[in-house]
Image 1: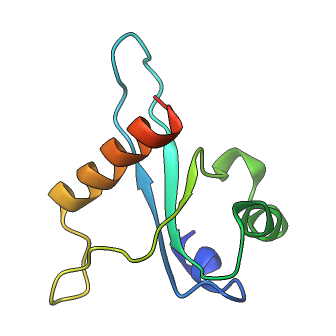
Image 2: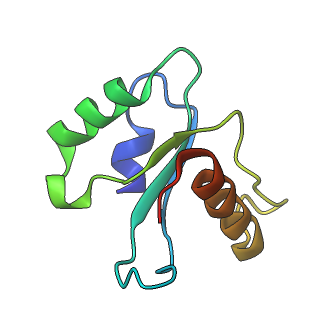
Length: 94
């Protein structure tokens, strides 16, 4: 799915991540963090709908200025958790 996300015109970097269930919510959510200056979330979601099954669409899709990759190009687990926590605070997803 990361391949399809990063193949969208205008996406410079992006990653799907699985958030952990919070509180009484027993549902883990698939989220995506995307660096795409000049592109909106609606455009990116429309493009993803053309490429992947709708069951795998991220909720939420968060536009960010950059992804916190380490020197090896990986997204460390603690940085992913920080991104998820920030998105929960800003967008209220659970």
